Image 1 (cartoon, rainbow, N blue to C red):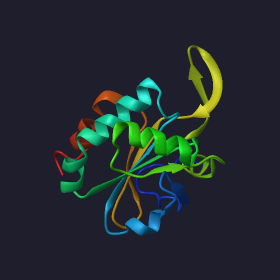
Image 2: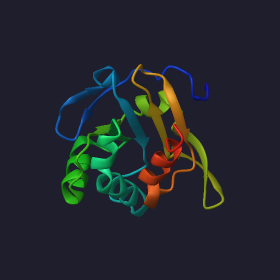
Image 3: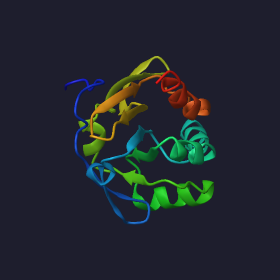
Image 4: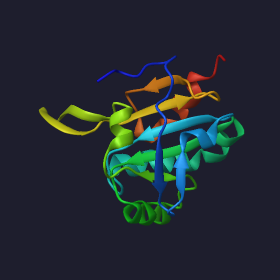
Length: 155
């Protein structure tokens, strides 16, 4: 599997969000996309990450970003999670792990000292033309928006 890095074209994807809407990467040409992959709805780290992005959503929008979350959970799970925490952005259900796999966000990882297969928490910032601009592999779930803003401080 090829490791996606900055400067590479972002793999095209199409999925369904928590409201049953079709979401495609091509829908967001002309905008910067924060595409974040997370393991599971309603777990502590994933909730902290989603709520941090929610709390900074207006600032992200003002800086020209749109936010899309992806996990292998179902539309129904996403709907409950989104409603419970009042998340203002689409959460894409990738139950077949096609998007996760295309972005290298699903595979072998270490968890509690053991090798397991699962979602590798990763965020991709995709530019207005569909090119990967930044990759965040060490996501700080409680300060994720600050992590993103810091990458653009000197730009």
